[in-house]
Length: 82
Image 1 (tube, rainbow, N blue to C red):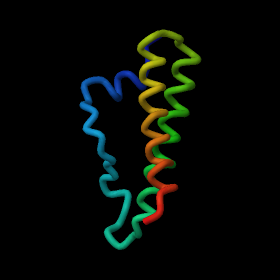
Image 2 (image 1 turned 180 degrees about the vertical axis):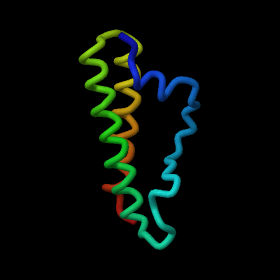
Image 3 (image 1 turned 90 degrees about the vertical axis):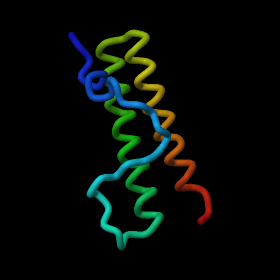
Image 4 (image 1 turned 120 degrees about the horizontal axis):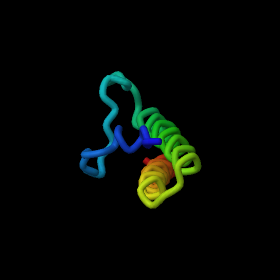
């Protein structure tokens, strides 16, 4: 069985930046944006973890760790004072 998360992430360069698209209106605060980034990245990490549990292997684990690292970085950003 193929990993659907791998298809979503395949070929995307990691530019170490957060992208929200149209999710955040310009009037929202910095904290709201960081909170959204943290929630989104935590959700992606959870999905990657489930994918790894369902289809163990090096690539699935690497995808999970990368997603978890992004979630950790977003949480760290949220914890930092403005």
